[in-house]
Structures are given as C-alpha cells and as structure tokens.
Image 1: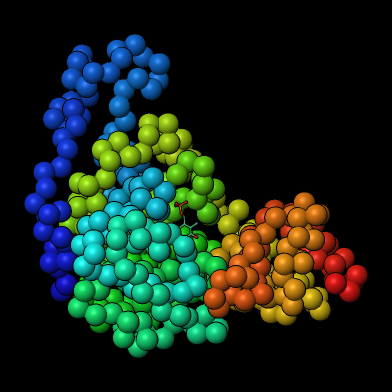
Image 2 (image 1 turned 45 degrees about the vertical axis):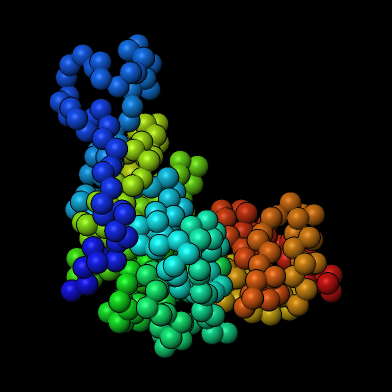
Length: 346
Ligand SMILES: *Cc1c(COP(=O)(O)O)cnc(C)c1O
C-alpha cells in the first residue's frame, strides 16, 4: 500500500495549522465573545463553519463516501493548487499531465515553480500509459489526469487509470469534472483501496452551481487532513455553504439526462453537415468539432449571437471548436445557424 505521508513535503508535515475560534470551542449555544465578530445578527455576522460539516454530511450521502474522505475547495482550482503545494518542492520536484487538457494544471504548476511535463494524447485523444510513465522520473510527485477530458470529451478507461495508480510511485489526480455526463463510473469508490489516488469533482458543471464556486477532492484521510490543514481557514463562505446545502437536496437528474440526450441529438444533426469534418466522441456536456475553417465559423457564430470556444490554436485540437450543450432551444439555434452557414457554401 502506498502511504501518501511518504510523498508529503517535510515542511507541510511539520507545520502547525491555524486554529480558529470555532476549533477551540465547539459548543452550539452561548454568548460568543471569542472571534471579534459584530454581535448583531444579520444572518452573516458570524464566521462560517471552517470544516463545512453540514455540507460534507450532505455530500457524503450523495457520493456514498465518509465525510473524512471529502475536501471542499473554492472551486476545483483550490485543491489543484494545494496538491502542488503539499507534494511538490518548488524548483526541485515536477509533475506530469496530459495534453491537450485543462489549462489550470499548468498555471498552478507555474505558480508553484513546479515543472510540468505534458504527455501528448494520441490523435484520437487516447492515452498511452507507457508514454505517460516514461515521462516520469524520480522527482515526479504528481500525475494529473482528466477523465472525461476537457477539451476532447473522451474518457480514459477506468482500468487504464487504475493501472497508472498501481504503477506510479507518487500521487495520481483524476479530474472528474464531467463524470456526471459519462457512462463510466467514478473512481471515488477506489480511494479506499488506492491511497495515492485523489479524485477531483466540482459542482460547477452537472450540478449547475458554477457561480457558487464549489470544488471537491476525494482521497484517503491523511490527504484530506493535509489539504484541510493548509487551506485558508474559511475558504467556503457562509452564503455558499447555505445555498449549496439547499440545492443538493433538490435532484438534478432530469437536467443531466436531458443534456446527454441533447448531446446525442446535436451530434447526429451536425454529422449531416458538410462543413463539419469530425465530431469527437464525448462523455461530457460539450463536443469538440473539427471544421475546415474554424476561425470563420467561430466569427459567423458570434455574428449570430452564439459563442463557442475556439480551441483551434491548441496542439492536437487544430481546426476545432468546442461547443457546450445548451438548452434544447439553444442547441436548435446553433444547429440552424451552422446549417445556414453550411448551405451558404462557407
Ligand atoms: C470546468 C472544469 C473544472 C471546474 O472548475 P471549478 O473551479 O470547480 O469551477 C475542473 N476541471 C476541469 C477539467 C474543468 O473543465
């Protein structure tokens, strides 16, 4: 069994975390004169729960995993940054990720002065494990994977990810921001078995809470404890905690299955158009589409009030636009517009 403790930087293991007023007294009722708050109740005059206990209890039910294995961050960007800080010594250690993929791994690596080696995916966006592991050396502390991957939309097969987790002597992070749209099962269930595995999820996509900023990390206790010790004490504000708890109690299933249906429909419609050269298979709420002349399509779509993401300058995504699946009306508008462009012989 790989013990994450052996991968944690010495200074992180040694530090004494900040102790909040709420850490030192945990009773429920009383006259609180311990945190220099304004005493007049306006709903938000008190500091929020630094441990997000109620929110974690709710997530624990939904994800079927103990609260001790859940870290809540201010978006996924927070755990991504903290992972670099916990496991990688600046200027010494390095990390390995895949390309093309989510841009924040690179930004967080650079911020922390950690070299990031990007392993190119194959032309069909599949991953070659041998290439990935060959890119690692004795100073590689973390591997970042993204499945379903942004911007390509495909999964890395579960069994393939597990092989990496088994073979790599370090931390493997799997970003599952789009897992709710996927047919593949989450790897959360594997954290009990693989202590070097960290799974990231978010409420920003399927759950419809991008504006509230709620990212999640699932891992073995020691990793979660370490993330919690070095985060800003009150990283999740009181308003977000309150609203997210309310929203988690309302199911989102219809929206997700509708988005998946709409994805299928849009793919089959776009497939008919001559201007569309290829649509990559997607397990996410977006599709990557290759055109002959993406810049032109992009600006024509904008002229028609439709904004997509131009990914054509990214290596491996040449000539591609990434289109998020919208409401049925929005998708119909997008198809009609592309059809019009198609028929105008663009
Ligand atoms: C959108 C996205 C996230 C979510 O980031 P948040 O900070 O939680 O909003 C994380 N990873 C990937 C790959 C994404 O595409």
